[in-house]
Image (cartoon, rainbow, N blue to C red; front, side, top):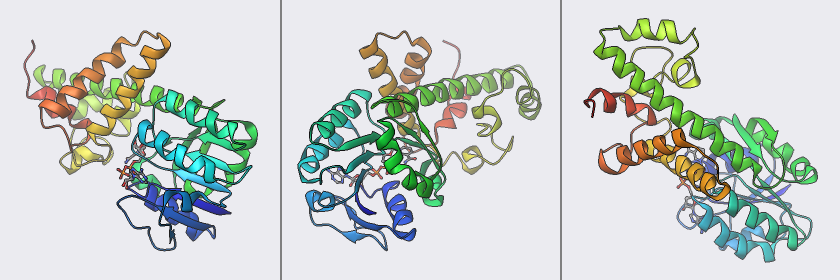
Length: 290
Ligand code: NAD
């Protein structure tokens, strides 16, 4: 396939590289970064989109996605597919899809989980929204960049799945960290706590696969002084998207709202920026009950 790739940052560059290594003809554009090896350089965003079968975007947020989409949609050839893999708000994803459809294009929103390691290793999970035809058109690319793709329904549903998943993740990480902090105060050894909870009804991915306590459970960012991993500010971004969606759809999400407040405080007032999101554990340990 002829592929345009817009947004060659931490995630986009290795994803574009994997597509090129698999034999696709990939042309990339980024306002700041040069393309990785094997990816041709476009001088403008329109050039990256012209005459391509699929144009992939991997951008910071919905406003930037909407601006880029309005530049590239008129340049794309009829029947081509616009595949957005960024994490953005559901409304932006749906707005971009409807302008793509109005111009005779297919559109798929497919945010990812798996992080920079998954992008480099080609092991991402894609959560996709769009038509059956759109999903089928880009499935071979999901197979190269990832290990799993779930078609979640019409446009915007990929983003919906992503923010619901990450809202659960933020809430369970906060719950796991505060429980460890309580266990410390009660004189319960962290390893014993892990041994019980990881095989009891309190288990979760946060406890079992990504334990926030150093030296306990499988290797995780806690064992590397909370170097991300998944940075607290990225968790805050996703939690804010969940609250924006909850507001727009009139959904009651009190735990998501509280997790958002805690991560906002941690990132913006307590030097949590640049730390892994599991660094909530030392944060709780250093505080007293209010
Ligand atoms: P990044 O900031 O490293 O990359 C974004 C890139 O977009 C940058 O290189 C920037 O120069 C480029 N860009 C910005 N505006 C542009 C424009 N108008 N035209 C062309 N390029 C433009 O971010 P990232 O970590 O690669 O994340 C990308 C997306 O993936 C985000 O939506 C993020 O939420 C999501 N995501 C990231 C991770 C992660 O672990 N980093 C995990 C899952 C999802």
